[in-house]
Image 1 (cartoon, rainbow over the protein chains, first blue to last red):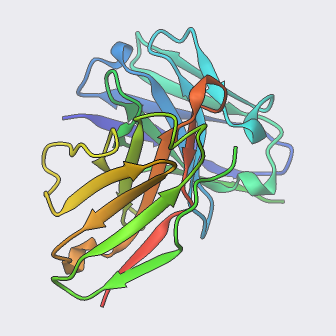
Image 2 (cartoon, each protein chain N blue to C red):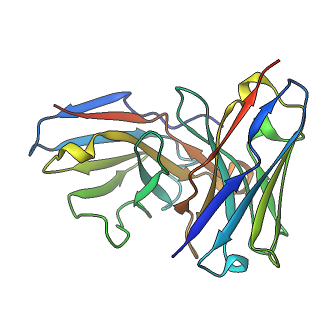
Length: 119
Length: 111
């Protein structure tokens, strides 16, 4: 059974940093592109970042470029999101999502971890 | 990266059908076959309903169907059931620069 479990969320002050993790199990992690998607309170889903199966290619939404960094460790079946210079508008539930093999969709999602940016 | 346009709400009575639209541009919805739809019950993980415009993952009832015409994709839900009440999101691949864009979401109410 495919499982994705996020961790690392919490309360952080504006300008602060946080590192999210996503532990994957139940599939061959190293063969799938992985993503982070977020949902701010009362808002819709927003794609954040993606990383290719090998980690060679990374992609970011414009508002996250230069502040967020996605990475993965295929030996630990883990995905990460380093978030710096956090702003109030980054407050959201952050989901880890797996892309399907050979297609661009998000076929499995974690339950999410809440990040709150507030003084 | 502009969000795809979805109606904020839709509704129907049990047993009825409803269609949700998702409008983008030739740089996303109109330019690629990678349009997906997700069902999201608040507090739960989103669930993939439709991928590649019209394909259903195993386990998704055939009451859910997808289509696309030009820059607009659509999700049709037939035989509405109470458990279909949820938020629905479309997404599209948008090329290597913008990668993925989501719609703003549609809240489906089963009356």
